[in-house]
Image 1 (tube, one colour):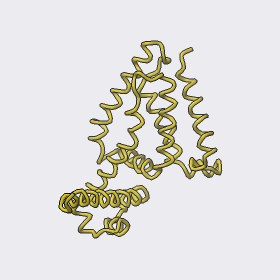
Image 2: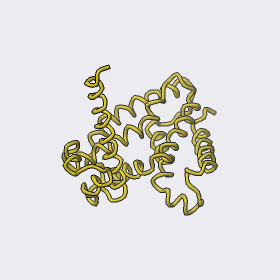
Image 3: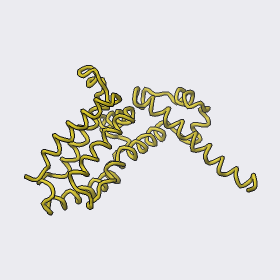
Image 4: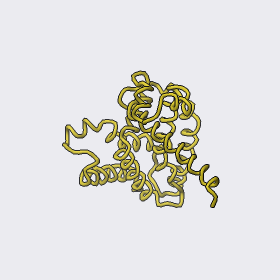
Length: 211
């Protein structure tokens, strides 16, 4: 292989790594200080790039903020995308709860930033919510409705089921300080994670099981 053939691949990997470093640094600041309290100089310093280089990839703080939020949405929605009609409904919801709790454990900053954006009225993410998110929820709600029609799931309103699943699982990230203050534990404690998973699964599954 010629050296010239390798360079484009190396260059693209270097660019991807730089973008990832910027997004990771931005997430750390945005989740703690919000968009208005975050300095691009600090983000660039933490990402180990020049501010000029940062602005080459993300021309403004707003563009960077939206890029971070869109990446969060990709992570946050991955478990929902995995739901399919061929699954056993209760097994699918159990798996969904596990995946969502794993996201809360592994990406707490992302969950808190998304929560902060929602509390502010989602001014920079409303288009994504009304577009791609709504389309995905509608698609998965149709699967839940099909399970109900087939007698495989209790008669619940799918959107409210999703809201309950989101609120319950994301609580352990968004209110981690409260959880730790009360229990002395976090989802990073393996035993507490399994205890949380078992309890949340049982309470929700018993509410949607066909009687």
